[in-house]
Amino acid sequence: MSSVDKNEIKSSAICRRLITHPNSKFLIAPLSHKRYIKNDPLGMFIVLSNNRINITNHIYNYDVNLSPFISDKLNDMFDNKVELLRQSFETEIKSQIKHSLTTILEKLM
Image (cartoon, one colour):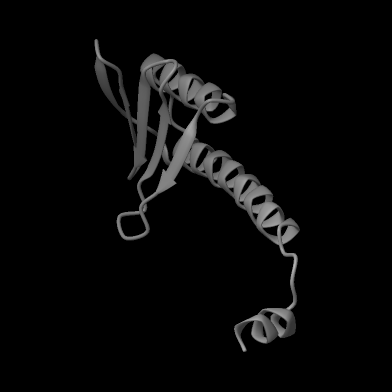
């Protein structure tokens, strides 16, 4: 494995903290496979794409190359977080089901 540069270490640590931060919001672009993290209270925005990380706020913008190993680790961490959010979302949706399809159909007649 090649040596990891200091900016890669720091930027990946920032990304990991934002992924676990309770106020972070997540988005995946299905065509470009970019992964977005937005944290309004911290004023930070991260884009993960093609072995790169872009970290932005209203003062700075860093664009850092990532080794494939670190990029894969961050992508996996991001994807696992989004999967947990999806499961929670799905559970919430299912818990709100109050009527069977038969009941709904009967109400429409």
